[in-house]
Length: 269
Image 1: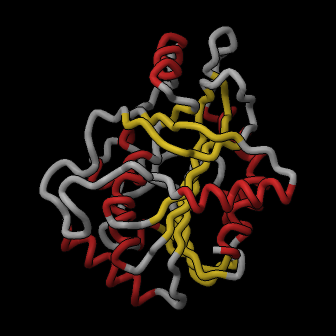
Image 2: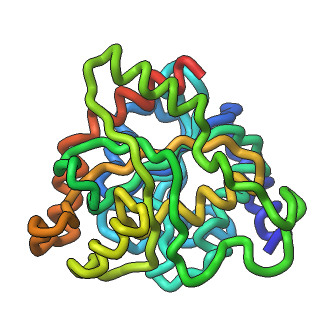
Protein backbone atom coordinates (compact mmCIF):
# COMPACT_ATOMS: atom_id res chain seq x y z
CA UNK A 1 0.00 0.00 0.00
CA UNK A 2 2.79 2.45 0.87
CA UNK A 3 4.41 1.99 -2.53
CA UNK A 4 1.06 2.79 -4.19
CA UNK A 5 0.74 5.93 -2.06
CA UNK A 6 4.19 7.07 -3.18
CA UNK A 7 3.40 6.23 -6.80
CA UNK A 8 0.21 8.31 -6.69
CA UNK A 9 1.96 11.20 -4.96
CA UNK A 10 4.74 11.20 -7.57
CA UNK A 11 2.16 11.20 -10.39
CA UNK A 12 0.31 14.14 -8.84
CA UNK A 13 3.49 16.13 -8.25
CA UNK A 14 4.22 15.86 -11.97
CA UNK A 15 0.71 17.19 -12.73
CA UNK A 16 0.68 20.03 -10.18
CA UNK A 17 1.40 23.62 -11.15
CA UNK A 18 0.91 24.96 -7.61
CA UNK A 19 2.44 24.17 -4.22
CA UNK A 20 -0.46 23.68 -1.78
CA UNK A 21 0.03 23.15 1.93
CA UNK A 22 -3.73 23.18 2.66
CA UNK A 23 -6.29 20.58 1.61
CA UNK A 24 -10.08 20.51 1.85
CA UNK A 25 -12.40 17.49 1.84
CA UNK A 26 -15.86 18.56 0.72
CA UNK A 27 -18.63 16.29 1.99
CA UNK A 28 -22.28 15.59 1.16
CA UNK A 29 -23.95 18.54 -0.54
CA UNK A 30 -20.90 20.71 0.12
CA UNK A 31 -19.14 20.13 -3.18
CA UNK A 32 -20.31 23.55 -4.36
CA UNK A 33 -17.50 25.02 -2.26
CA UNK A 34 -15.51 24.26 -5.41
CA UNK A 35 -17.23 27.31 -6.97
CA UNK A 36 -15.24 29.46 -4.56
CA UNK A 37 -11.92 28.07 -5.80
CA UNK A 38 -9.92 29.67 -8.61
CA UNK A 39 -9.25 26.33 -10.31
CA UNK A 40 -5.93 25.81 -12.08
CA UNK A 41 -6.20 22.04 -12.50
CA UNK A 42 -9.09 19.58 -12.04
CA UNK A 43 -8.40 15.85 -12.25
CA UNK A 44 -11.15 13.19 -12.18
CA UNK A 45 -10.38 10.46 -9.67
CA UNK A 46 -10.61 7.92 -12.49
CA UNK A 47 -7.45 9.40 -14.04
CA UNK A 48 -5.38 9.25 -10.85
CA UNK A 49 -3.34 6.05 -10.42
CA UNK A 50 -4.51 3.84 -7.52
CA UNK A 51 -7.23 6.32 -6.44
CA UNK A 52 -10.61 4.90 -5.33
CA UNK A 53 -13.78 6.07 -7.09
CA UNK A 54 -16.60 7.99 -5.38
CA UNK A 55 -19.98 6.28 -5.82
CA UNK A 56 -22.28 8.55 -3.77
CA UNK A 57 -24.63 11.16 -5.23
CA UNK A 58 -23.38 14.63 -4.39
CA UNK A 59 -19.73 13.51 -4.48
CA UNK A 60 -18.56 14.37 -7.99
CA UNK A 61 -15.16 12.68 -7.76
CA UNK A 62 -12.55 15.28 -8.71
CA UNK A 63 -9.26 16.42 -7.23
CA UNK A 64 -8.97 20.18 -7.62
CA UNK A 65 -5.90 22.39 -7.45
CA UNK A 66 -6.20 26.17 -7.32
CA UNK A 67 -6.47 29.16 -5.02
CA UNK A 68 -8.86 29.97 -2.18
CA UNK A 69 -8.41 32.97 0.08
CA UNK A 70 -5.34 33.86 -1.97
CA UNK A 71 -3.55 30.62 -1.02
CA UNK A 72 -2.69 27.52 -3.02
CA UNK A 73 -5.00 24.68 -2.02
CA UNK A 74 -6.03 21.22 -3.12
CA UNK A 75 -9.58 19.98 -2.63
CA UNK A 76 -11.34 16.65 -2.83
CA UNK A 77 -14.74 17.15 -4.44
CA UNK A 78 -16.17 13.91 -3.09
CA UNK A 79 -14.77 11.51 -0.50
CA UNK A 80 -14.77 7.75 0.06
CA UNK A 81 -16.82 5.95 2.70
CA UNK A 82 -16.48 2.68 4.55
CA UNK A 83 -20.10 1.83 3.67
CA UNK A 84 -19.24 1.91 -0.05
CA UNK A 85 -17.30 -1.29 0.50
CA UNK A 86 -13.85 0.25 0.74
CA UNK A 87 -11.37 -0.83 3.39
CA UNK A 88 -10.18 1.78 5.85
CA UNK A 89 -6.82 1.84 4.04
CA UNK A 90 -8.68 2.83 0.85
CA UNK A 91 -10.93 5.37 2.61
CA UNK A 92 -7.87 7.15 3.98
CA UNK A 93 -5.60 6.63 0.96
CA UNK A 94 -5.99 10.28 -0.15
CA UNK A 95 -4.84 11.54 3.26
CA UNK A 96 -1.64 9.54 2.94
CA UNK A 97 -1.11 11.00 -0.52
CA UNK A 98 -1.73 14.52 0.84
CA UNK A 99 1.05 14.02 3.36
CA UNK A 100 3.45 12.86 0.66
CA UNK A 101 2.84 15.96 -1.48
CA UNK A 102 3.38 18.35 1.43
CA UNK A 103 -0.05 19.12 2.93
CA UNK A 104 0.24 20.60 6.44
CA UNK A 105 -3.39 21.56 7.21
CA UNK A 106 -6.62 19.71 6.41
CA UNK A 107 -10.14 21.18 6.41
CA UNK A 108 -12.92 18.57 6.56
CA UNK A 109 -16.66 19.01 6.24
CA UNK A 110 -19.61 16.68 6.50
CA UNK A 111 -23.36 16.51 6.92
CA UNK A 112 -24.57 15.20 10.27
CA UNK A 113 -27.68 14.42 12.25
CA UNK A 114 -27.88 16.68 15.29
CA UNK A 115 -28.44 14.98 18.65
CA UNK A 116 -27.90 18.09 20.76
CA UNK A 117 -31.32 19.52 21.77
CA UNK A 118 -30.08 23.09 21.22
CA UNK A 119 -29.28 22.42 17.55
CA UNK A 120 -31.42 23.23 14.51
CA UNK A 121 -31.32 22.11 10.89
CA UNK A 122 -28.87 24.37 9.05
CA UNK A 123 -26.55 24.94 12.02
CA UNK A 124 -22.79 24.90 11.46
CA UNK A 125 -21.10 22.82 14.17
CA UNK A 126 -17.38 23.32 14.60
CA UNK A 127 -16.02 19.91 15.56
CA UNK A 128 -14.07 20.03 18.82
CA UNK A 129 -13.61 16.27 19.22
CA UNK A 130 -14.91 12.98 17.87
CA UNK A 131 -16.02 9.50 18.90
CA UNK A 132 -14.89 6.63 16.68
CA UNK A 133 -17.78 4.18 16.31
CA UNK A 134 -16.47 2.48 13.16
CA UNK A 135 -15.96 -1.30 13.34
CA UNK A 136 -12.46 -1.08 11.83
CA UNK A 137 -9.66 1.28 12.83
CA UNK A 138 -7.83 3.06 10.00
CA UNK A 139 -4.44 2.45 11.65
CA UNK A 140 -5.02 -1.28 12.08
CA UNK A 141 -2.19 -3.35 10.60
CA UNK A 142 1.45 -2.57 9.98
CA UNK A 143 2.33 0.95 11.09
CA UNK A 144 3.11 3.45 8.33
CA UNK A 145 6.42 5.34 8.77
CA UNK A 146 4.57 8.69 8.87
CA UNK A 147 3.79 8.55 12.58
CA UNK A 148 4.08 6.54 15.82
CA UNK A 149 2.47 3.17 16.43
CA UNK A 150 0.29 4.71 19.17
CA UNK A 151 -0.49 8.31 18.09
CA UNK A 152 -1.81 10.80 20.62
CA UNK A 153 -5.34 12.07 19.90
CA UNK A 154 -5.89 14.54 22.76
CA UNK A 155 -6.16 17.39 20.21
CA UNK A 156 -7.52 15.77 17.06
CA UNK A 157 -9.01 19.12 15.98
CA UNK A 158 -6.57 22.00 16.19
CA UNK A 159 -7.49 24.46 18.94
CA UNK A 160 -5.77 27.38 17.23
CA UNK A 161 -7.83 26.82 14.07
CA UNK A 162 -11.01 26.57 16.17
CA UNK A 163 -10.22 29.92 17.81
CA UNK A 164 -9.60 31.46 14.39
CA UNK A 165 -12.92 30.13 13.07
CA UNK A 166 -14.76 31.53 16.10
CA UNK A 167 -13.14 34.93 15.59
CA UNK A 168 -14.11 35.03 11.90
CA UNK A 169 -17.65 33.86 12.62
CA UNK A 170 -18.10 36.66 15.19
CA UNK A 171 -16.74 39.26 12.76
CA UNK A 172 -19.11 38.15 9.99
CA UNK A 173 -22.15 37.60 12.21
CA UNK A 174 -22.33 33.89 11.47
CA UNK A 175 -23.70 31.78 14.31
CA UNK A 176 -21.77 28.57 14.96
CA UNK A 177 -22.15 25.71 17.38
CA UNK A 178 -19.42 23.59 18.94
CA UNK A 179 -19.67 19.87 19.51
CA UNK A 180 -18.47 16.29 19.29
CA UNK A 181 -18.90 14.39 16.02
CA UNK A 182 -19.67 10.67 16.28
CA UNK A 183 -18.73 8.61 13.23
CA UNK A 184 -20.60 5.41 12.32
CA UNK A 185 -20.23 3.05 9.37
CA UNK A 186 -23.71 3.61 7.81
CA UNK A 187 -25.27 3.49 5.29
CA UNK A 188 -28.57 3.54 7.20
CA UNK A 189 -29.63 6.69 8.96
CA UNK A 190 -29.94 6.18 12.70
CA UNK A 191 -32.99 4.84 14.50
CA UNK A 192 -34.49 6.97 17.29
CA UNK A 193 -33.01 4.56 19.84
CA UNK A 194 -29.56 4.85 18.27
CA UNK A 195 -29.80 8.64 18.30
CA UNK A 196 -30.67 8.53 22.02
CA UNK A 197 -27.70 6.23 22.69
CA UNK A 198 -25.27 8.40 20.74
CA UNK A 199 -26.45 11.54 22.53
CA UNK A 200 -25.91 9.86 25.90
CA UNK A 201 -22.44 8.79 24.76
CA UNK A 202 -21.55 12.45 24.19
CA UNK A 203 -22.17 12.88 20.46
CA UNK A 204 -23.65 16.17 19.26
CA UNK A 205 -23.63 15.27 15.56
CA UNK A 206 -23.69 11.83 13.95
CA UNK A 207 -22.45 10.95 10.47
CA UNK A 208 -20.76 8.34 8.30
CA UNK A 209 -17.37 9.89 7.51
CA UNK A 210 -14.56 12.18 8.69
CA UNK A 211 -13.28 10.24 11.72
CA UNK A 212 -11.02 7.83 9.75
CA UNK A 213 -9.60 10.71 7.69
CA UNK A 214 -8.87 12.77 10.79
CA UNK A 215 -7.17 9.88 12.58
CA UNK A 216 -4.82 9.29 9.65
CA UNK A 217 -4.18 13.02 9.21
CA UNK A 218 -3.14 13.30 12.84
CA UNK A 219 -0.98 10.19 12.51
CA UNK A 220 0.82 12.11 9.74
CA UNK A 221 1.12 15.27 11.83
CA UNK A 222 -1.37 17.22 9.70
CA UNK A 223 -3.42 19.88 11.54
CA UNK A 224 -7.19 19.45 11.21
CA UNK A 225 -10.21 21.74 11.28
CA UNK A 226 -13.68 20.24 10.89
CA UNK A 227 -17.24 21.44 10.39
CA UNK A 228 -20.41 19.36 10.56
CA UNK A 229 -23.49 20.84 8.89
CA UNK A 230 -26.61 19.81 10.82
CA UNK A 231 -28.90 18.57 8.04
CA UNK A 232 -31.44 16.64 10.12
CA UNK A 233 -32.30 16.15 13.77
CA UNK A 234 -31.93 13.06 15.91
CA UNK A 235 -33.42 14.70 18.98
CA UNK A 236 -35.96 12.75 21.00
CA UNK A 237 -39.44 13.71 19.86
CA UNK A 238 -38.13 15.40 16.71
CA UNK A 239 -36.82 12.42 14.72
CA UNK A 240 -38.57 12.26 11.35
CA UNK A 241 -38.07 10.35 8.12
CA UNK A 242 -35.01 11.61 6.26
CA UNK A 243 -33.54 11.00 2.81
CA UNK A 244 -30.15 11.63 1.21
CA UNK A 245 -31.77 14.22 -1.07
CA UNK A 246 -33.09 16.17 1.93
CA UNK A 247 -29.65 16.06 3.52
CA UNK A 248 -28.11 17.47 0.33
CA UNK A 249 -30.68 20.27 0.14
CA UNK A 250 -30.09 21.31 3.75
CA UNK A 251 -26.32 21.26 3.25
CA UNK A 252 -26.54 23.31 0.06
CA UNK A 253 -28.53 26.05 1.80
CA UNK A 254 -25.88 26.65 4.47
CA UNK A 255 -22.85 26.13 2.23
CA UNK A 256 -22.17 29.87 1.59
CA UNK A 257 -21.67 30.49 5.33
CA UNK A 258 -19.25 27.61 5.65
CA UNK A 259 -17.41 28.70 2.51
CA UNK A 260 -17.04 32.24 3.90
CA UNK A 261 -15.51 30.99 7.15
CA UNK A 262 -13.16 28.51 5.47
CA UNK A 263 -12.04 30.97 2.79
CA UNK A 264 -11.13 33.58 5.42
CA UNK A 265 -9.42 30.97 7.64
CA UNK A 266 -7.25 29.89 4.75
CA UNK A 267 -6.42 33.52 3.91
CA UNK A 268 -5.31 34.23 7.51
CA UNK A 269 -3.54 30.95 8.27
